[in-house]
Length: 454
Ligand code: MG
Image 1: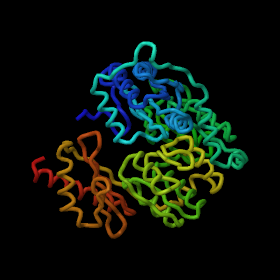
Image 2 (image 1 turned 180 degrees about the vertical axis):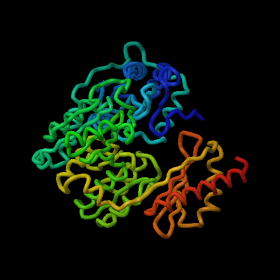
Image 3 (image 1 turned 180 degrees about the horizontal axis):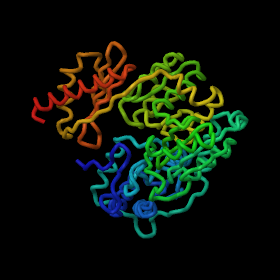
Image 4 (image 1 turned 45 degrees about the vertical axis):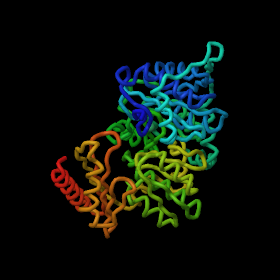
């Protein structure tokens, strides 16, 4: 058995500690052997981007691949390029929202989607082997490709009512987090006639503006500026711009659950009812609003490739995660920050100011906790939790254990895929009850752990 290299979002690590040029070169050869044809490659703005791109590209060429270098573009832009060109696949060099000392290598399947686990396992197997390289006169080539970002933005524009958005004359504060969207999203806003006041819209891989995870705390400047300049909305990306999050005209942070719900509502209403796909960790707010508008909600395990593949299987036009990673089937089956912005602008044009839309959403409260639990005991804990706690409501094991109570509130207990921790989310329309149930679930878990010797 090959060691597991790929996590939920590719291979990630601290540059020149665990994410080294040796690893990148060998992984490049393994990916090259797997794809065996033309491979697109791109980076975000991290300072280690060129170093790792060069090493991966050397491996790809050694195994005979034709490398197409798209430069710095968002992850969904290289995904769109792979989907629409005759290439075998793609490689994105990014660590998304992680701190700047990290970087990562993520494979893109030939149809532009995130690579399924089975295929990653094949690459991991090759990685462990001595990979045969081509003879000197049969090695691959590398060429620069210009315009992938512009083509991606033009494609996004085909899915929204450009004339209506232009006519509205909106103003937006845009925070690119010094990341991969620093050229594409300003271009998107320009083409939509949106006046953009930009923040951190230059490529600085040390991320001097703020950490690249788009949390309320990291976006303080954007929130304040949105209110101060009288903008209609604030917009921010994570480092590789597969996600977008928003602020209202009053400078209030819009959580990912809420933007997911608002956009789900417009999609469902425009289709006259359809399916929406989201992980079990999303707020019931999404389900309540989707159902009220004649739609149907389908729950999956956590992970955007899982959501995307379920959307394909069900023919669902829309899906997404509560972190601002939204997927639009008419564009492409992956999280897409620019597409999310275009749809949110359309939402404002059609339904009015963002703050009033947010205020109209049903209110839910979430209590979040985590407990430490060694990775090898997580399954034991879930099994015992299911027996002891599952009977309190309707138990679902799509991902960890989700127990839904008669009043619609729920508690989700799921093992982290990366850390030795166990997360407990409790949601209810009653703030006190959410906290009470979270504390109860935590107490049961701790009691079980001491009972089974964890
Ligand atoms: Mg990302």
